[in-house]
Image 1: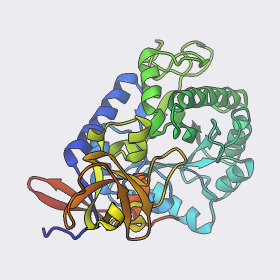
Image 2: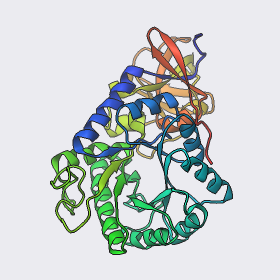
Image 3: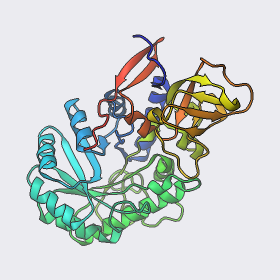
Length: 386
């Protein structure tokens, strides 16, 4: 296939498969279900790798993403979002439930009641979203029982509770976020069971906090946490059993929903979640100028995305030059400051986006560099935000 012009997104399949396998193996060893978030890649080739590697199912952010995956044969999906189910989404979710196991998020009594009116009897399940410290969506853990009871009254099967510890995206925060995630989920479980709603799954996960969560599962505890060890086979204390310290509570299954780990990005690099050798997706860019003594590339915000966390040192990095930073970003220009001799005009470099999810959603295709050539992987769920 002809080499695409720059800028384009390029995947290293060897690194990708290694990332997928490493996390799958660690989750399996910990007895934790892995349900990766497909919004990172929106790509069937990557989804198939994750499922073949042992993922229990996939996570999505929108009904549109779910539809693409179900059409491709995926049969277990969780829409990790407090969906407001209108007529359109009700029809689409009912149609999906005819072909796959489907669950959605709820985080209010009103949302649960509305979902029940529109989806009752369809087989669509719900998980109650709780706030474990990110302060975006989700109810307080102590209020999870009220929402779960409303869902059950409305005729919806309640699977459990979930949270997104997004406050892990800060230096020195991932470990504390993993502790907060676990404590909040355990508190939600107590609230739900006190309300008479059985809990089957406790679901968390972000890429920065993933290692701490899985390490704790393997070791049986999280420093500073309460509520016993993370899981084990039935009848034993260890991975998978949230109630090992309290046999009066029903056994539940722990689950993690990381997304970025498949590719990694400049944020994960700066947080120390990954090494440069773990970065499996870059933007191939061309040097177009040396104006003002700096490197100017053709990969602007319309390719890389414009995310920059307050703690980030730039709008992206160069994979082979750890000292380099994108210090200025516009739609079609990335200005890089770096030490030493600048790559000559016309040469190509690999840029690591700050937030890979945004970069992927801006592309029609990913280009997998393998076996001496490039192979086009369509971003099948690109732009499906509803």
